[in-house]
Image 1 (cartoon, rainbow, N blue to C red):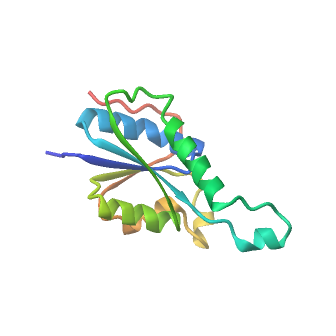
Image 2 (image 1 turned 90 degrees about the vertical axis):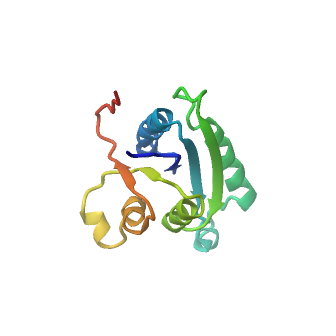
Length: 151
């Protein structure tokens, strides 16, 4: 029997991540699992400032992330769910894997942008790296239009 007690939904606040949230929320409901929402703040490159661009402060980035996490699942019925919201600084795939390991997560549900194979030749996607390094199963959700239904 499959038992899920801790489900991790890392989010970058994209449409692909919101699509994956459908799965996260429904699985958390069906298994009565705790849902962890995680946003990893990737600090801006120092070269942005050198090029004359505005670089938000660490506090501004954290404030945005906390506010976004609080409203992230507003489109879903989450009243009965135990939800923990966390933001951390670092490299997204490494922090996602670390969080999953530290919290004994049973499943990671992550959105993929579905850009195809060629962009992955040089850098690889966060979802792809998480799948390779995760200490637990990973459900990678492509943003195509289909519905997920559990009995």
